[in-house]
Image (cartoon, rainbow, N blue to C red; front, side, top):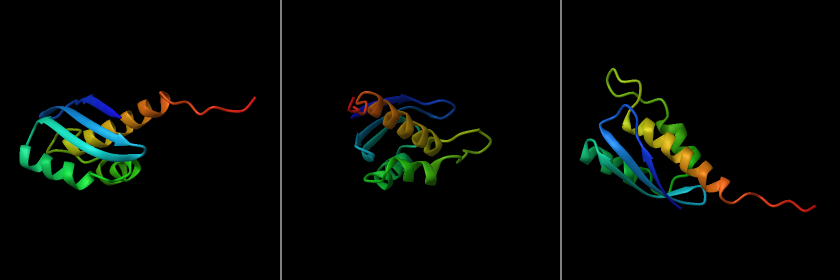
Length: 93
């Protein structure tokens, strides 16, 4: 599943994410510190959404309340939830 997330409070303006099940298959940041964000994108490739959240949630950038890694964690969670809401679990009646 491909998902675009509009960031809040960071230099990057958008994060494009691809998920395969509960794993991150690709990440692309639009804007921000290009080299650092390319590195983060490569590091999280193949990780489970829950692992990305555990490692990156709550990271702040200077005096800002958030950071690009923190926004990536939020983006992964939102993409995962969107993916799963599109495919509800069917129950036998």
